[in-house]
Length: 175
Length: 112
Image (cartoon, rainbow over all chains, first blue to last red):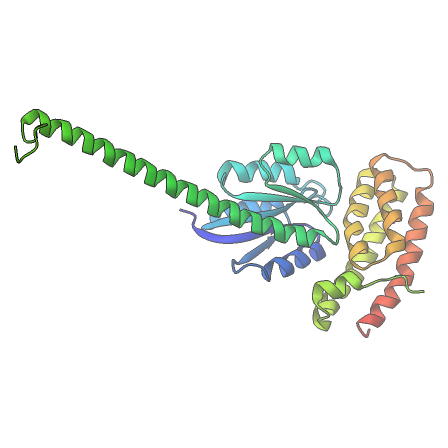
């Protein structure tokens, strides 16, 4: 069972990876694990007990190793095994079709690399925390509603059973 | 006039000299290799490699505040993506000379 929360960064550029890990490390207490390729990330996901809260995933992961898996393929694989894990895509290109494509495959957000990328990465982390908290609260309210509905139904059934058996009548007790 | 503008890096590192040194050091180590890869890709007319190498160098140039190199690297990347040979060699030469000017400025920043 995977249960150790963590933050993953999958980025083939050393400097970008370090900068992001440095920045996000100051925002969160979760351990940060960095991977230069999607293959290494997927291997770690399948063998560790990690349950990443968020994965920052580079869109182009083949600038160092030309035949490395690209970000979109890694995203698809992550979503197959860890559907609840939120993936934030990083790209050097501000292209709407790339952003739409990543969202279609389940990415939570799409960030264009540059000076504002770190602020946006931080914002995405905050939004994911809030989204998960809301989802947790919604699940709690759903459970409570179902519990009350079942209890109410049982009370009605009990009332009819007691009424039928004569244990209670429509006549008040003092008459 | 300086080629580099370290406003972003100073803000990011909160003027921590060790962190500044770390990132400038990484750039000084990686950028010449990436520039070599760009030149090699152009000579070999390997457009996807040219695009890929330019794509990797692009954000680093931004982080080091090498403003005069930003448009050049973006155009080189686009030319690689579109397999455009015409004018690309000149752009690569311009970028190289800008980076060659930036390196000593960066080294000076970290006391190297």
